Length: 164
Length: 459
Image (tube, rainbow over all chains, first blue to last red; front, top):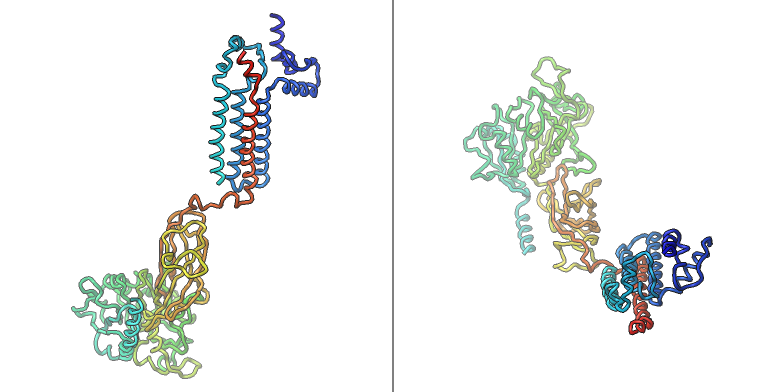
């Protein structure tokens, strides 16, 4: 019990000590690590604990951020004529990002190794019922993915129409 | 049909030597027949130009300007009556009604006798003022006739007037000397755009009442060119009202009198020619404008098909062509209308206020008309617009043309496609890279189904 309390207090106190509570991953960080070490550690932790699909989602989202940022930069530099083209291109990137983020929220939490989140008692209680995994998020991954495709197609339809 | 009518009109014009553009019935109001005989050249000139001259005494009971509520005459020439006023059938109200019904009036005054208060109040309606005692005459000690008025200096010798301003047509100009005996001077009000001076007194002239023993120098209201010998008003319906200060100038005696200015040679007067110009202008033989065909359409290189002519609707930013055909009546025929040197005929494209005000350029000429045209791009504003030509000038009849058209905005398929605008290529590329990325993502996602998950599930 004291150990658990100690862990809970460290999670809230500093990010550096958060990975220390993780069950898997590289060696735990020392308390007086430098910023570069922390970043390195976070990255290693991310690579080690994230599932392939979530990493794919993250890569796609990074791509969307890049595309949206470039379009916005171009608008700032070159002016907004034709404005509908800017709105269409930029909103396509933003909307796709939002949809992808939603998909990530719906699929990532259990796609990786089970992470014990010590603070939430209710969630822990639910994790006991390990068989019925999909009921936790409410939807199956297939259903989430189908919703995602449906939403994306509507978005693309509108954007292509609007860009004329 | 049009050509037929034009041909008939030509035949008609050829048959009649000259004819006013607005009818030939002329009523002359004069006191008695003895007076009538002293203007015989004027009457024969008018009849020779195609007028139907009838004479009435102002005292006559039969005299009426209207018949069944319509004008009984087209033109009215009023000579100054000997008695007071013009009688009950020619009150200022009757005369103004006559003007309002497009009748033209030439009113002659005389400095010999005091002008009646009825005429004075009629002139006030037109913002033309007579001198206070109404019996003043214009005297000029430098431009008088030495033959007939060596003592009194009240017979003025003047050149015919040139155009009023450089941008106004001259209808009364020409060579020669006018003799104007005993002129009743008029002054013009300053705020009426309808009145214009035809002939002004010279700078050395002044008004003086010969009946007064001592000329009251401090009472002089107006001198020099403030005094008008002939002034004209053209009402908004283009009816004309001319005031001639000296009725004697129209007499046979002065039509070909030989006169001599101080220090000058003996010459004969050109009063007859001036009387012709003055009556011709007043009775609408000159200075009458007619608008012929008005065309507007989209600007094209070739011929315009008939169904594309004068469309009811335009789009914003359309290049539009407008042309107007103008003729001017000159004594007995329509001739091409020529603008005065410093004047412009303008087209307004207006919705409440003009969005364009453009000079129309003469582009072609027919036998009877000039075609003025211009090209412009309709403004970036949709609504109900009108093509307006509003040409109102002194001595010319008013031209006010208004043709309404609708200007619509772009239809949804009339905008340029986005790939036609190179500035939008970056965003098009952005959109398609998002879509392409999405497709690639979907494919990769489907091929990277977590196997571990399923095995876990089955366990």
